[in-house]
Length: 188
Ligand code: GAR
Image (cartoon, rainbow, N blue to C red; front, side, top):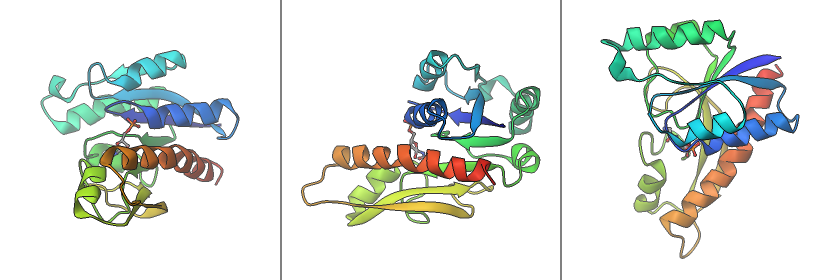
């Protein structure tokens, strides 16, 4: 059984969707640990509710990014992690983790990449007035929401759509697409 580490900086609804699909037996993997870089992130309570180990490792506790990622890497080794699943982890992955987990780090992003990378992708797309946006899952490289695309799902921006209704639609799609892609990945 493959072991996942889920990295999240915020709410953790994607973590929740993944954990639920694992419980239902829809993903042949287990979450070995949850990692957050933000004190009080919503994902912490969600992980505790699933009785999963959750670690809050703050970058400011370290002098360099290399040291920060080395501390993370130790935890990943301790828990025999196979894949890193970024679920709203709002930080660039550095050389230490990229080198140790080549082709084994994936990310979900709320736009049809390469359009609207970075923060507030839903707002960026909404303000640009696009008629179609969507969700992307991709392998992670050193760039911001770059790296080979694994799968995408388009979403129409309907007449009278608000940013809030669009965000709801996008999250709903994320919660289906990400577990599906993760299952494909771990069953290879
Ligand atoms: C998700 O919409 C995810 O696609 C996005 O953060 C949100 C996290 O929500 N990620 C990025 O923007 C990455 N650049 P969640 O904490 O409820 O899972």
